[in-house]
Image (tube, rainbow, N blue to C red; front, side):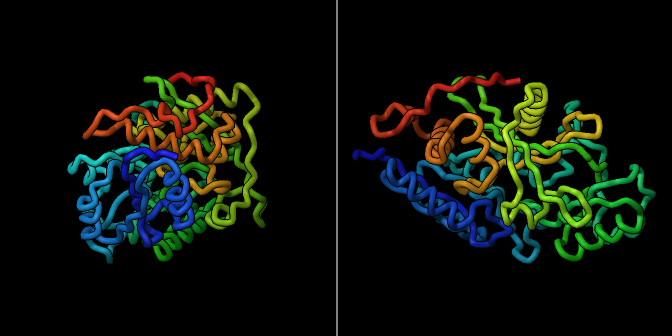
Length: 353
């Protein structure tokens, strides 16, 4: 079978705190894309010096599996002087998959994302930030119950049964725990008691269209009778996922997700998490613009398959092609016009809200 004469490298880190792609995921993507492209490999980036490997290799496309590299490894994710990979790649005119620096920076800092969404008039619960080791603790301005989580950790890190707090003592204990265990400030927000949804968004080939694909997520009951998508639940993949059959809820959740996606300046693909309040009104929780792409595991692949019957292989090929569409070096013809690349089936177009 004739392959397309392009070189793709999947960029990830062996440091799990930096990488959004696991080794299993990156190996699966390499195996899949190698069926269609001449050269596909993985570049591991753990330090700023490692970035030079990408420039030397001059790939036609970087399949992005991480967001940044800290200049000071001791500070890690808390380093204010990060090198954002998308900014670095833009400077060297190398194309990549997914969103650019501004969107990734908003996504990483959950309170920034919530403020951006609020500034655009989009629903999100009231919140404030408690900084680590804050010498002066202001009076809690929100009504209990509240939900507490790290401002800049993903994958459910720092979220557990103690995240729902009903009094000041519980709030202080959880803030201290997040500071000690995760070295993070705490996002304190009003607790949303309704159903939870994860909405996958994938750019369609038409100029204004996106596939908007919601799932309802149902976490198992914890020992306090709450359903919390904790780090343990996410890592064990023990939550249930359901199709969103109610047309009103599906419409409302999908519209909110698309508005958030646009407000954050995201492009091509990503996942928006939403929860209903006590009145059934959808509220933005957080975004993930480099969602898990592990076949059969992540909510993004599950949503693609359940909503539009998009297989894992076609999903990866579509994300790859969307990255090529941003090429600054060449005017590339869609790989789906090549005889050896399967075309996506004709699907109903969801308008850009």
